[in-house]
Length: 203
Image (tube, rainbow, N blue to C red; front, side, top):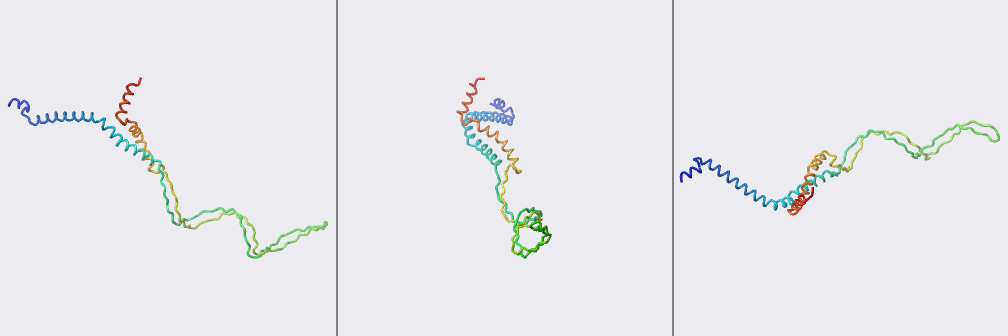
């Protein structure tokens, strides 16, 4: 009995324990590998369809929507703005005179029957309240503060802001991954059909 015990332990209990732990770990890992191989076909479609595909597809769709999104808002504006500009003015208007306007016009009178001509002066007056058409064509300088109170609608494409580049990179990253996950077989039957089709396909 002592000889058998010495053969097992070799006089070194720690070495015997390590040997047992290595053998036990190997056997346990082998059993777990067999279980995973047997359970894999049952678990893989559930994980793919219920977890991986919705997450990847949802993230990809979110990044696409964010890249195409538009920020719509209204900015209230209530402040004084200093105007310093020149406004060209070209228009016609009617002007009413408020008092009599005397006129003195040189004139030449032609006498009938070849009587010759007479140079003279015509004096008359435009009565008050007479309306005269006037053509205006001038530059009007404007230099004064103007109070502005209004709401300014603003629409900004997210792709044109600083956030556009990161979202575009995320979209380019997840789009191939989404295509890969979407094209994976969703069931064991579909996997078997693809495998058999690949084997039977002539080369």
